[in-house]
Image 1 (cartoon, protein in one colour):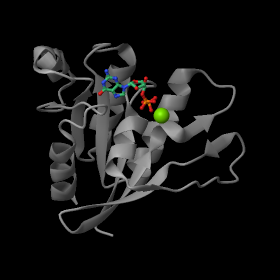
Image 2 (cartoon, helix red, strand yellow):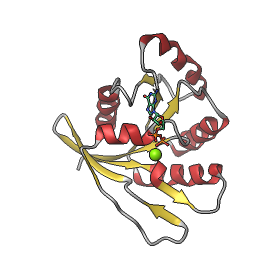
Image 3 (cartoon, protein in one colour):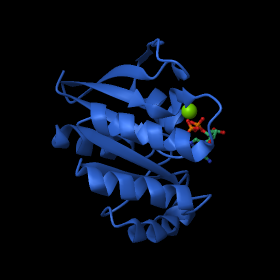
Image 4 (cartoon, protein in one colour):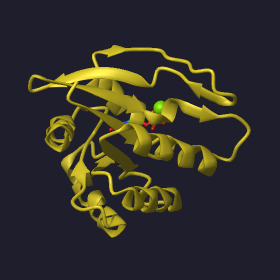
Amino acid sequence: IYGTAAIVGRPNVGKSTIFNRMIGERKSIVEDVPGVTRDRIYGKGEWLTKDFRLIDTGGIQLANEPFSEEIRMQVEIAIDEADVIVFLVSGIEGLTHDDEMIARMLQKSQKPVILCVNKIDNSERKDLIYEFYALGLGDPIAVSGVHGIGIGDILDQMVAAF
Ligand code: GDP
Ligand code: MG
């Protein structure tokens, strides 16, 4: 294993869709931490002969807590466990307060971050990536999990960061 990457982002941006694209096989792991369910969040992938571990943090759930607390915990686990973080946002829904909160946590962590704008399904949507420069995390990558666009670009940057 060359390294571990984690996908973070608020609910519904497409984390699981991208995870499934990057991983051929899925594993189901449940840990005995009270109130925390870890279900089908770890996968293994390979890119250009390099094996990596991938975490879909959206599968880490916290019972009876507000969404923002759940996201916060997901990002903390990603920062603890991953060598590089794939931060996913949605071009269709646009920049949100939760995106900004996640960006601040990631900046503090000093971990390498790959900012990816999902749901850029066609070239007319390309301009939707620009507002995300405001997060201060560098150049966003345009991706479409549904159509498989940009996945290779994410993988290139991931393995370069290991
Ligand atoms: P998660 O909550 O972040 O894991 O997001 P999911 O992977 O479950 O996706 C949430 C919704 O967004 C689903 O209805 C997906 O089909 C949709 N979705 C995911 N990726 C794309 C994409 O690239 N384009 C579009 N248009 N929809 C997407
Ligand atoms: Mg999910």
